[in-house]
Length: 181
Image 1 (cartoon, one colour):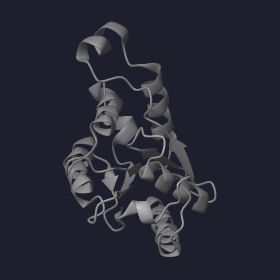
Image 2 (spheres, one colour):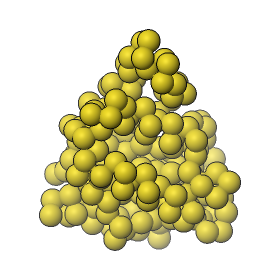
Image 3 (cartoon, one colour):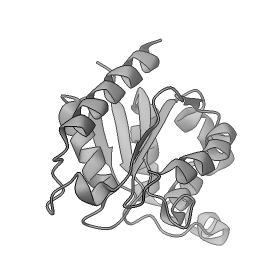
């Protein structure tokens, strides 16, 4: 079984993307381990020079480097990726020579949930140049976009939609096949 690190790009406690990631982790029978970007400071080159890489960032880098795959669960804010998520990835790619063991060749997939009608297609598209720059091995065969997320989760974040449950199960199974290929 592949070991996958999943990261939600939202900090909100009742985030649909965090709920989506939790559902994937539950369906994966332990293959998906949830990581968080909470507490990562805004990237600042002066801070990096004076204090080095923050401990939270170092820990997350180690977890990603040790994983077989990376799952980015992205909200869509103003037709693009969330700033806090991009900020975390920017820290994770610093210093530049650290980016290679963390990201280069890492099988990586995108998914996301939004209350809007188009899923997270624009956010996922905005991630593509970033993924290319990181030199990940992007799995484009299984992008999953959840529209009208308020209708598929209950107020506690539990997945209600059986069709989405099936899509998530297939997504994670197919991503594992991609990792192993």
